[in-house]
Amino acid sequence: MPDLGALEVLSAIARTGSLSAAGRELGLTQQAISARLKSIESQAGVRLVTRTTHGSSLTQSGSVVAGWANQVLDVAGLLDAGLASLREAARDRIKIAASLTIAEQLLPRWLVSMQVAAQRQGVVAPDVTFSATDSDQAIKSVRDGEADLGFIETPGSLGGLRSRVVGSDELIVVVPPEHKWARRSAPLTAAELNQSFLVSRKSGWWHLLGGVDAEQPAGTEVTPDVLEFASAASVRAAVLAGAGAAVMSSLTVRDDLAEGRLRAIPVAGVDWRREFRAVWTGDRTPPAGAVRNLLAHIATGR
Image 1 (cartoon, rainbow, N blue to C red):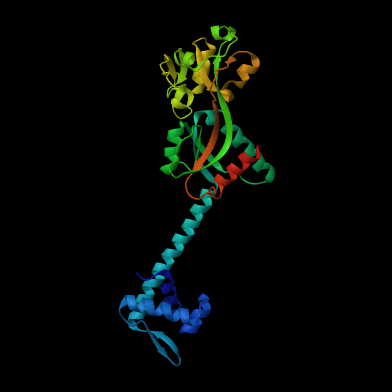
Image 2: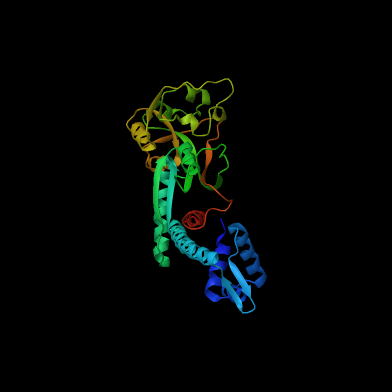
């Protein structure tokens, strides 16, 4: 198939009657015009233009091909305009898949503050939709094109995705004030925690940092009895109701700790600090438009 540039040349020659006039209309040198005409004639296998001292005219075959070329160029113009419209719409729309802690504790504040900032600047805030899931599913959604941006809370290989740190927190053991651990003075050991009854999210709290080995001493086994719930909010409610201890994000229970509804129990020999990351596909720089604007807004800490 001839490329669009060659079709444009043939169409311009039909309108203007000469190669030089076609070149002026298209902003091309006569050498470039001749090269494109030669290319389309070679692909067509017939002569399309007759050159004379008085100008250039289309052959009978050239007139037929020029008519087809005009139709193709019209459709190409519609395609170009449609793609431009889609690009513009995509700049103002973003789909997000976020892990539960980020979706419940951070993303609403980020989106509301971004909307407020947009109103102050007199611009329209992007249209954002998001789903709360786990980190593995957020990564999969971005990789499969179901989400433009993901937020995750576990480490590990991202399989070619780009990422940026957007925050951090720490996992802590929490119990209600009447729990026996609330009265102890010495920190828990990892072995004690691993052998205790725990309230947990359905994936198991020991997976939150990317694997068991990262948070237990050599020679110990993770064998806790676990009461599982689908969300951090359900785990928090169960702990407040006296179901037992839980390992939770400090962000999830900060108000409960401040008001004394829950107590944080130290655990010796473990570091449960973790980073929250945004993930996307493509270049090292986040995609232009809503994705890049949101990440820039988060970076300002507003």
